[in-house]
Length: 180
Image (tube, rainbow, N blue to C red; front, side):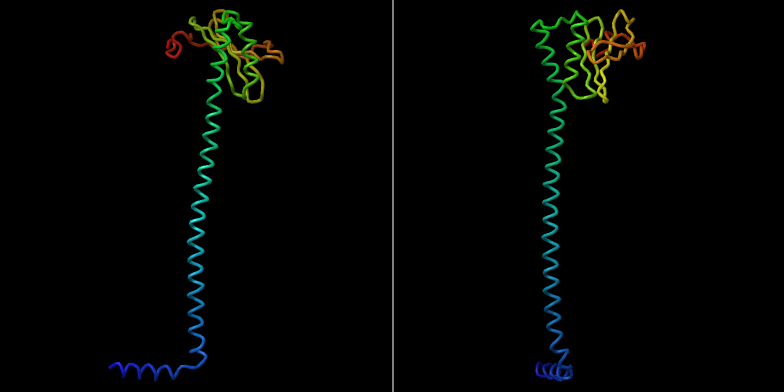
């Protein structure tokens, strides 16, 4: 049987044109080499892309964490400054004018959309808000305002220029966050 197989192969092989006999092995080698290089290139590209995506994700996470930490550190830093100022006696919380000036300077040093405020046990509130466009607003709620939220526009020296709005509001002392 093996002899017969060899004879069949020889008779069929001898009928093939010489160009086919020379071309087919060359084409098979070329296709094999190109296929292998293509697969290796695809595989390495995929690994490189995964490493790049991981690196980019880690960098983005680190930047977001850094931004959040610096942003969330602002209220803590403001509270520490305010506590030290009150403790040292540099600002009397009963003196609205001194408190307003202190808050105005603090708001100037901070980012837009920052509010620095103080509320006492009576539910009175005094604060300065720095708007996105860099303007300063005085927020006041006390017995003189009949416990309405009054918002005043401040000039470049921190003094109230005009009443922008007055909103009736429930007294702060009855709110749970104020009682706590």
